[in-house]
Length: 349
Image 1 (cartoon, rainbow, N blue to C red):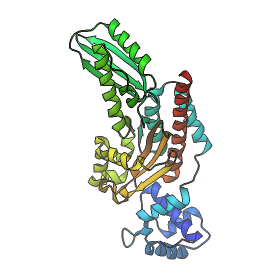
Image 2: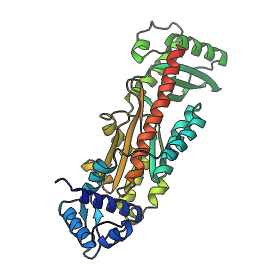
Image 3: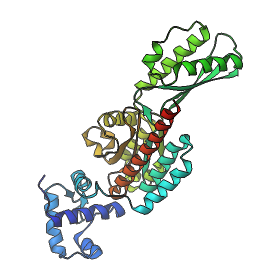
Image 4: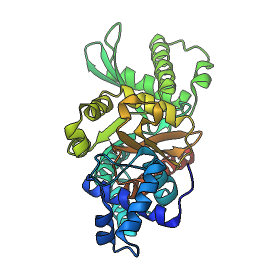
């Protein structure tokens, strides 16, 4: 693609912003009048024709104005808004909401998803921080009824898993608590490899529980991400593109069913730097279901310990000016919270 002049960059940026707000093709007269440009509608028309020839704009109908193409959006994201900062007022609002919930780790993910959806006016996704290597922190064994026991395993980094066990015979809560206490003393801060290398337990119940703990930790290491939280899908469904297109609505259903989402996260998380924002426009030729959509993603956390992903999903005509800095700021904020957890756990040891 040829490099744009300053005037072409300005006209492309204004068309993207105007189309984002109105979902209507943008004409030269509207640009000249609304933005009080220093050049004539005829000059704007010539530049719009040049941008169309270069592949940054297209004309839906002969008599209509122009709308951005995928390449037009990519240029706008890369050269105009990628490094934009979030306004101080939005930073303060978001920070205050998290400050109120900073002691309640379980509220971070739904709160982050809610804030992202509200700030971006699109759909949001947030995954819980996921340990790259599972490390044992704490075990609870709770008698429920008869031979059934609830096993709650907490890993370093805050990840929690629960499962119901059915034992061969009923076991008292006193004995279950004693087994959990011994395993907590034995396994704290250890990896799956370190726990597997421990001497075999003589107590049959301890041995069985330890086997289940190892299986649970191993499954956790194989997962791409922690639990996924979604919010704001109604924001997307109200956009014109999703009201009129079955194809676009299919993308929303796939997001809800998680199959596409897991693939998306697996492919983007492997080469993503913490804090770096990735913008996927039109599926980038990899996800056919997303060819009318855009996804803005960022990785957060502490590499080598625990990381997660957060992002925004919406029509290609999303407000990148607002969404990109919001996603970046939220990733930095969550990274700081994960760092506090890890430092606190290390200080406890």
